[in-house]
Structures are given as C-alpha cells and as structure tokens.
Length: 111
Length: 113
Image (tube, rainbow over all chains, first blue to last red; front, side, top):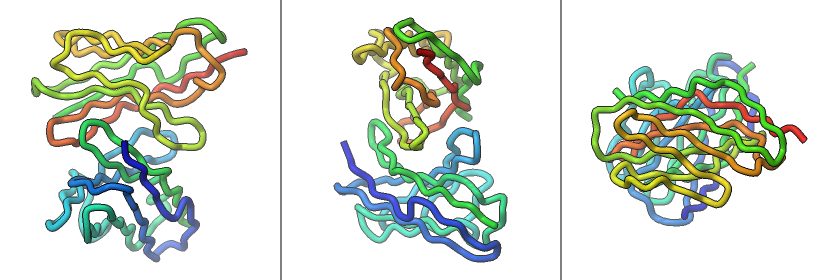
C-alpha cells in the first residue's frame, strides 16, 4: 500500500489567480495521476504524471491550464491556472500500480 | 474508449440487510482490473474490493463480494449485513493495463437504522 499526503486540504481563491496542489507519496512510484471531482459528480482523470517526462493529458485538459510537475518518484504538483468559478472542485492525486491509492483531496472554491 | 455505467444514483438499505449495487462497463481490452471504491463524506477514496479480469472466481472481502460477469461486462457489488458506516458514495472503476482509471458516476448508499 501507499500513503499519500496532499496539500492543501482546502482553499478559497480569487478568480484569475493560480493554486498549486502538492502530492507526496511515502514510496517511489512510477506513475502518478491527477483527478478532478466536480460537485456531486464522479472522478475525471486530468493527466498522468511520469517522472522525467511531460505529463500526458486527457481530452479536455491542457497543459497551460493544468501544468504538472514531477521532479522525482515521490512527489508531484498540479497547478490550476487563471482560475474561474467553474474550476471549483475536489482535486485528487493517486498512485498505482494495481490499485489506486488516493490522497485526501483538495477542495478548491473559486470566488 | 472505456466507459463505466452505474445506473442507480441512490439506494437505501435497512441496517443488517443485504444490498447490491450495479455496474456495467465497456472495453475492447481483455486484461484489466475492476474496483469498487467507497467515498464517505470525508471524501477520502477507500478501496472496497478488486477483481482481476482474468480470474473467474468472484472476489470477496468480508461482508463485500462481487458478481463478475465478464461476457456481460457486469460487475455488481453485494454488501451483506449492512452497517451504518457503510453509508457513502460508491464508485465502480475500471483500470487499463496502463494503470489509467475510469470511474462510474457513483451510487449514493444510505444505511437506515
């Protein structure tokens, strides 16, 4: 199993600003994943973060809006850029490989 | 493309009774994993049970068991002896060999005392 620490747990941000979410894992993992969970909805994969290469984004998500860093095998960040109220969601990171372990999530509210 | 469908947005069950949550999926892959996750109000995603597609035997984890029908692409979750702590959102999920997950829309389960 893996223990994942995600920070911040929640934040309220002004529109037009950016927020960086951190995800720390207690063991080395090859792939880390970032999800968005809009209010009352399921999880949608934003991107897969691989160490040493650019993140792979799912359809509908772009690097300019959601830049991701993966400096080593235990850490990743997701930035939500130029935020609007539509970005208000829970953002979760997870790691594999044969099951997904999740962080506690970051509840983002954009006002 | 992979899709996961949960047709029951909400369900309720009396404490100590049994309830079954439905899930169907669509994929062209032959090797994959299926999961049920629980998300209580704390929003922490908790793994309930996992099934490897190549295994014919249905997975069981204490009060939780699945009915995996590969040909029908069906993966239902049975919760026996329901407890108040089982109240949560339940998500069915599909994982490709590439470790990418796809989640259903969830079923909100309420256990009634």
